[in-house]
Amino acid sequence: MLAIGRVYDERLAVFGVNLSVVIFIAYFVISFLLLLTIKKVTFSKSKYLLYGFYFFVIVSNPLLWLMYGFPEVTGVSPGIDRYISFCLIVIPISILLIEKARYQDISRLFFVLFLLTVALSLLAIFGLSVTENLNGRLSVLGGGPIIFARWLGFGIIYLFFFPIKLKWLKIPLILVFIVLIFATGSRGPVMSILITFLVYFLINFNKLFLKFILILGFSFFIFFSFNITKELSELGNIDRVFMNFSSQGVKKRSTNARFVFNQRSLELVKEYPLGVGVGNWQKMINKQNPRHLIKHEYPHNIFLEIATEYGLISLFIFIMIVINTIYLGFKKMMITTSVFSMYPLFFYLFLFYLINSMVSGMIIDARILFMVAGLILCTRNLNSRNE
Image (cartoon, rainbow, N blue to C red; front, side, top):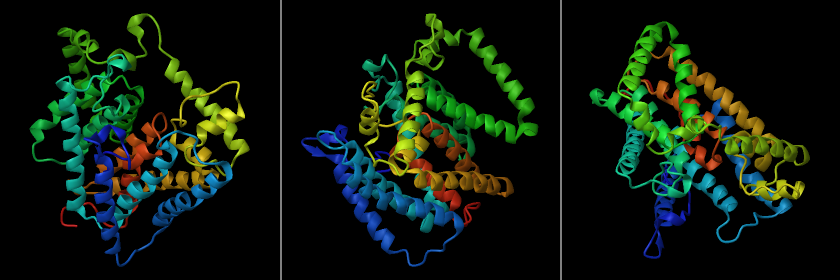
């Protein structure tokens, strides 16, 4: 359910039965029963912030819908689906991981997600997922290039920061994931993974400088000596990542759209500081400026989405969660002495998904971000296998 991320997904209909609904029902029943087994909750300032955000999202949104109307979309409303999915998928698994999961449970969960990344990559490699209407950009099972790129980014970070037994597989798999993430043509995830590893390099500058220079020099030698760049340019839509320089021009349409989203969102916040309700962003900004209609349903920035749809109070709480998570994640990562510590993986995954969520996707696409935030903020020690 964490991989699907939605209560209802029309792509998973088989013989008239929607498998996403079936899976969700099973997930919800199991989650509900597990939540009932939580006998004691130890609160901290960090938990107050995260649980407070969840509570405010659950309570405030129905009131905003009553004030500004339900999302005006035919069929299954994306706004209602996003609200239900966040409340019944993201929140329960976040609470269960914080209150119930132990080191081995979390280790198995991340390993399953990694296997999912491998499976999606195999589909792409064997040509079962090229999306023709997106100019050859690689995607998987109709999920879109950005979603696929995020999973590839997860795989890269998992392999790099989590200790696994088959170490000889790390480098080949990382290289495959890197090639595929460029082939998706998704600038947001590529930029996010580059910034994430830049942060890693800066934190560990003294240890990594010489290795970095050697690896970079060797990579350039291999690429240009064997003309690999030409071969890669024919895979997926790598050229799009570099703004289509090879075609004598920079493709700016999607990039400029982000600036429009930002400007219109800020104008909406000024008029509706308490938010307009999930799924109403498009309706309200077009109502505010009917001479410039926008067809997109959300602002492609989690901070602006929360500010416009959930309100400035929710945004303030979320910013506090982000600051607290980065601080505690960095602190726990730096003081750890165990090679089996999960905190390096949590910290860099959080950075990767946070940067991603600032340039693409919506709040329900940031479900792993909230999951990892909960694991960083929880009071249990996740430095050792024995915990």
